[in-house]
Image 1 (cartoon, rainbow, N blue to C red):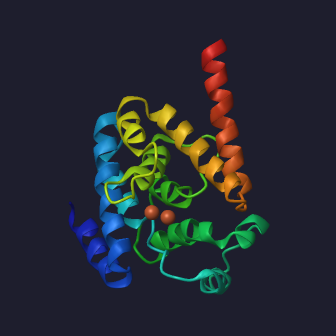
Image 2 (cartoon, rainbow, N blue to C red):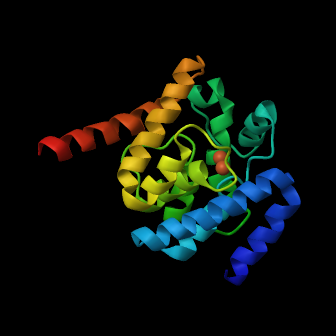
Length: 196
Ligand SMILES: [Fe+2]
Ligand SMILES: [Fe+2]
């Protein structure tokens, strides 16, 4: 780990709950392993993994207020389900409070909750690492997803999104339009690959 990432890790340890900090390290190391497997930039994966939840330390009303104070615009969907906002505020904090200016790292942080159409390799790595890191509780298909992430990254991204959307639908939860658009983009890509 380079000096800047060690410094980031020390700062996060002070502001995150112990369980969130452990999850952060799990995502960081899983993102590094996936970056090694799929040929992404290791240092960028490490930094994005470390910072992906750097804004996950507010309740719903506080996070909306934090965004307002910084003049970060929120969509109607984000206001309807504020749990996703920590990704956008996290990217802002990574840039303005942790000195990260690399657009690929900022994008991976900003898109780790909902995804978006046309995710980059690093975006997908952080999204998947967030779902499969070792500390995550064993959901029904977790073992399968963990293997798939190292054998077929795009299929893992597709199936994890499908699984999350199914879960949100069965629980009657609000679904952000970016999540739907991201999955639809992958579904079309998969269809095109199958049928040429
Ligand atoms: Fe998150
Ligand atoms: Fe996370």
